[in-house]
Figure: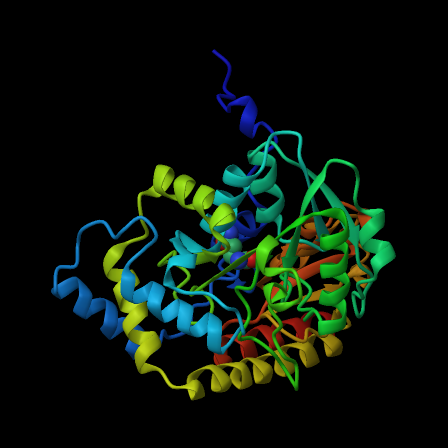
Length: 386
Ligand code: GLN
């Protein structure tokens, strides 16, 4: 019998470089700045909220769209922070933003449909789309500013393109899409009748005077946008797997059906925990978090400069792409392994985020780490390569 038991549907799939580098890092006992694990303390409001809900024995399935208090809290946040015009019934709570994205791919598109993504992209978007039988097309953006223009988008579209992925702030580049750029995206969506699937999971991680703009707030976009986000990053609860999709009924219903089919619901007590935390946390929490991460960005990017691993300074999210061509390695995987072996710091090969060769000269570091770990990583990198 063949060793490869994978179905044809997932033939293309292999272990992600993100997870593979975590395993290599554990094997070599390095500092893991590869996977976006975010091992920082979660706010007590979140932990207490969930502990209370567990003790109150809120242990049964939540309703089709998710626990009512959580959907109420999410809709309030979508109105006040994102500027969307949505209510609790316009939301489905999912198993992370990843679950929302995968459910959207399965629920809204047919095999052979095409979906466009900006490059660099988050690999899980590509694989979730492919797993649902879609073809991906890529819209390459150029460092250091990764500017979006109408012609670059349109060059990435074909007659089969049904949708576009809009991830801002961007994993891995840290780009924050401007209002002007999103207006360009919106214009293209309207002209070509595209559905937009957003991923706004890093919406609170903004540096300097950046604003987060939700695509669905632009004219004519609410009817054609699935707004996706989650709590993993904002509350440092990556393992809780809680996210959501907000969309008009015709788009939301299919997402809800797939979510129900695969998962029935997200863990109920954790949904209540996050709902309670959202009520109890003040605005301050979010702004302080962004400031803390800006300090981390500065510390780590300065170290990369000193080490000669040229960073493309991010404006948002908590990753940085570094140009590692000075190491003279033949591929990004080789470069990432050299950095791990010689400096004891794990990263993710840039090739995981690019269809083109550009990724072979890059690695991605994640600086969502406690200050002492970051400082240690910075020291090891500058001492080894500086
Ligand atoms: N989003 C995180 C990253 O980009 C974690 C993803 C994962 O572990 N699959 O690293």
